[in-house]
Image (cartoon, rainbow, N blue to C red; front, side, top):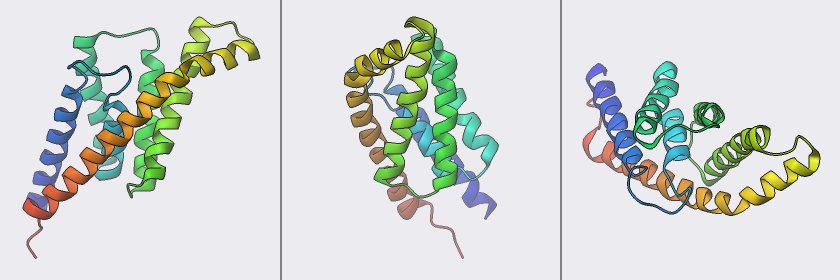
Length: 165
């Protein structure tokens, strides 16, 4: 059992590291694996501390190369919330991915509003309205990368990580 869990954890970590590397290559704006990595960690890593810490550490390392922004705190908070969604849902679904995407969008753009828009209802509405085109790409990226991570891991688990009984 312990050997199986160690192999499973190693594969999960490898999948997340490979996914985050796609942040470093040219891509459409916001078409990244960020939300998918957080959700994937929450869905599949049974150790809760590792489920939250690993995606954050991987994200932090990639941000060292890409740079941090004024909304980094909100991005990381959204990242933790999406991981939380994965830990409570425990079953991947289109709804879970959509919930993660929407949560990430709401939290990060709230940070954008706080730091760069008038603190009025009009400013808030303007912020979220102007962010909608980015949400489209984020949602497409979340669906794509979540699908690759989930289906890819399920395939590897069935083919190579079968627990011996």
